[in-house]
Length: 258
Image 1 (cartoon, rainbow, N blue to C red):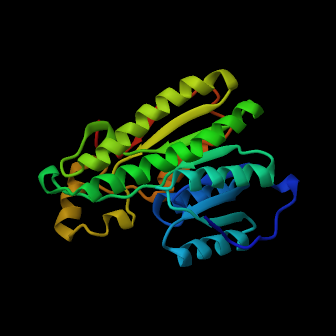
Image 2 (image 1 turned 120 degrees about the horizontal axis):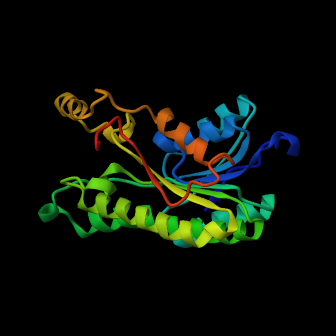
């Protein structure tokens, strides 16, 4: 795990809370970092390969008066994910929000899927989920407060052909969310999942124009979601407002699964 150099820290009066976002350098994760920073959170976010994008995001947030610290973590490495949260707690004395967002795709029909295709998708989605959530849950129990938001997908809700690995990983996140929500509810901690449909990020970059048109035709709203629309929901779940909302998977897909 590689931590970027320290950045100027806002005063305690300026900081709303401490948040960790996995997979935060691009796509939905990047939008979540932006949303939480603008809401006043001190955010640590992870990246793996795109150091330039991570540094750029941190600089953008600093210029806007926020604080976002990039940390290089391989989400498949459970110990590294745990260390990230442990170090955040050691530095800040608390953790208020954890957003488990890290994930990849390796789409193939099952007969053509390799062991690597299977393992890489499940390990990226689930190892870091466990590694980060365990220490976060312990600290939140001590605080008797906190929010955990897990990013899943409609693929985990309904299943999508060509995505047995991704659907399995995202369905596992939903089950994890329900179980953890029941464990932490007595401590006033809310745990929820957000399941986006098609989101206009680089995950759709491989779509041909024909594939994009066909996908949009399946969505009643006739467009893909913007990443900021997903992060807006995550931002709400990260606040103190939804005190009685826990264990739920909120689908945000433009009516795709209606």
